[in-house]
Image 1: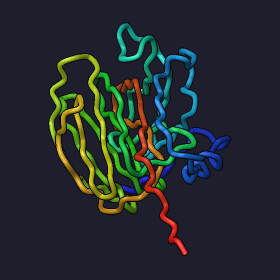
Image 2: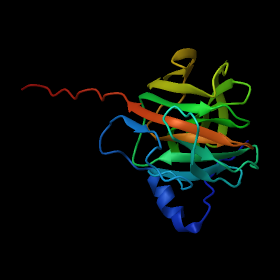
Image 3: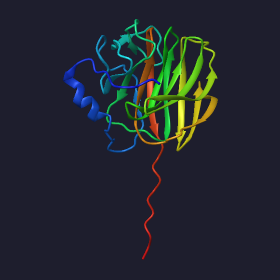
Image 4: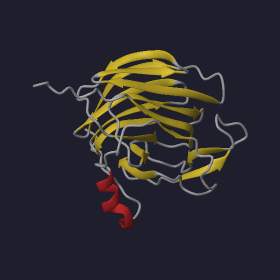
Length: 224
């Protein structure tokens, strides 16, 4: 059994980070993070870093790139020597996601990288990870235990490729360059935070992170 826990890098933001896990948005709206207005060699704005699982170093920086999906910047987790069971995450601040779609572009590399979504706390979340060979796995964590929900394969033909997840209640679909890879079911669908994630050793690069919540159903009021 793998126990998942938040491992803050410093006590200065321990309490705020834990409180932000429960933050709810003022309203559901599409959010696009292209990182091109962030300062190079600095941490990304509007994101909260946490480490889940095994303790390990993690450092997220904005770096330039020759040809990212959105020029000129990319977001990179730069610590290469990380334990296999350590999950480095940056959570988008002041957002909560349940239904809709989440997408990002991933640069092919040596690590396992992807997205975390519907994160209710450090033990309950969904995570999509892509490894260097193109194997794609969607897993659910509940009470610290991991359960694989679906698996597929994506052939990297370009330096950057797009991955996305759509969610509607328990129904999930994973896409590679807007073509469906597989369907899956969330055993405990609920609202939670979402962000970018990488596990184990190796550098991980991201660009164009988009959260597009589904429109809430209108409330019907009975007429007298």
